[in-house]
Length: 370
Image (spheres, rainbow, N blue to C red):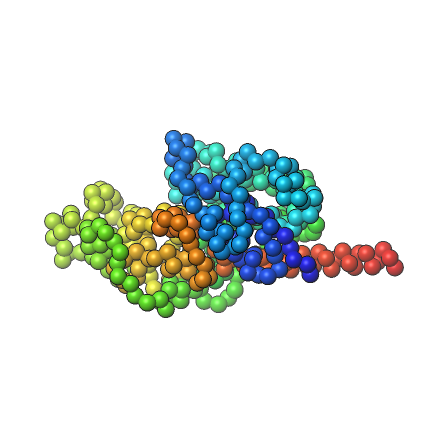
């Protein structure tokens, strides 16, 4: 079978592309990412993710710094030298920020970035790829503003596409992390089947992913934060354990804990300043994973936050994947990424679907000739 062409929109650090590229049956012919991180609710344009150099370093393609909200689909197709229907796979993993339930505003306000899901339809209509791939938070298809996905699905249907969409915990597919995500595959030329059922093997854990790495010293510059991490019990402890520890005096607790921790209800925000468990999958790694105060991102045993390399392994990246840019940007990049260990399975599935379609075409041609 010939190599299948791929365009990668909202390409980020290359998590999706990595799975497709390393499959060997796909060629990434272009990528687009504006490199804009989480905007400040319209008050600012957001900082840069600086993700395109990471993509170029690992995928071998220089992403174009376009705004897909305003990029003209026809002009882009012509620039890429593509005929309608010539492209095999369009990957379009629009930002999840406006859908995620972690942002309380998203329960009430339809974020303007959510329209990028519908915007994908304009590019599908112009490019007419054989397959469309999307990944997002589960709220894309089951949340308050799933209207955007439903509109896209109707447009795809009107163009002759069949669509599969479902919600899965990606830990089911070998990711050593609990990560609930919506997966979408649309096919232009045949009935699409979903990603094959999850493997029955035991779920991979933090220990499986990072226990082989050598120990490191903490690089934390804030002595109080480092003392706080040291006070958290090994293997799954959190700030709540400090508050409930009778061996700590009130004065010591006031030093170790933030004022907000004293105001919080017992049991609330249990992951803040928490350690991961060795023998469980990691909790969901998100964009804001660059500080232990943002979640359960401390090492199970060592008194430090997980490194970029450790978090990348928990995100299903290969050990030789290189993140570039400022350290905080590297954490942002991997937290935003589609796990390559899952995108590789999506790529293999699409390759099988494409091969089946070719076989069906060959049979139909032989029947006509006969």
